[in-house]
Length: 87
Image (cartoon, rainbow, N blue to C red; front, side, top):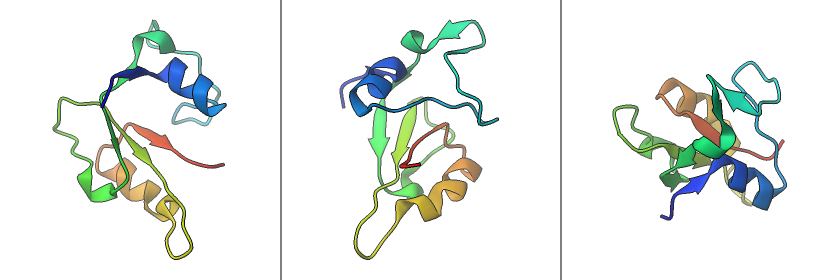
């Protein structure tokens, strides 16, 4: 996967970035969202590895017989740092 910044991801998806505290976020620890990049995109919550050097984003897909949003909490508990959801 091509590395992509969080700012670019938010722009192309017309999305908003939120911190764990559910507050709209434009920076984190003196870094801007332009400084933060995603290395990998996964749709299977079991693929999240908190020990990986990659920054993985979990994409919560929704289909006629499944809903990835049901696994959001599991992803967080496994060390997932970024979730892409339909809110």
